[in-house]
Image (tube, rainbow, N blue to C red; front, top):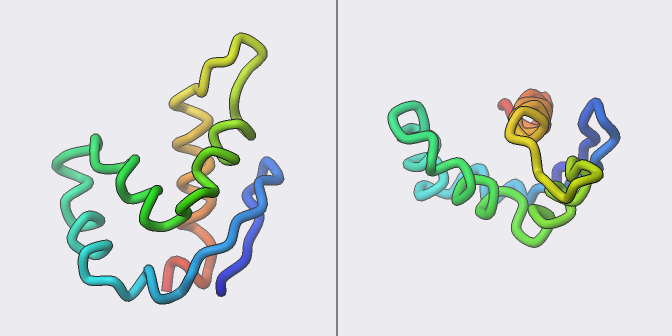
Amino acid sequence: MIKGTTSSGFKFEIDEKQLKNYEFVELISEVDENELLMPKILKMLLGDQVKALKDHVRDEDGIVPIEKMVQEIKDIFGNTQVKN
């Protein structure tokens, strides 16, 4: 299990097997051409933690800002263990 914390303080856990899942790799390879795959990638990577991540970045109006989600995703993928 890979554990990490984003720069904003969101704690996450990722099952290492998911990073070796061919279907996950397929989605990652296609995301540059179709950014709408990102929610599916996050669901595969974080599972039920996606809701907690959205709640973590949600603003006072109840909106989940795209910019904040993108930063969190970058932090998660920037984790040394996830990157490798």
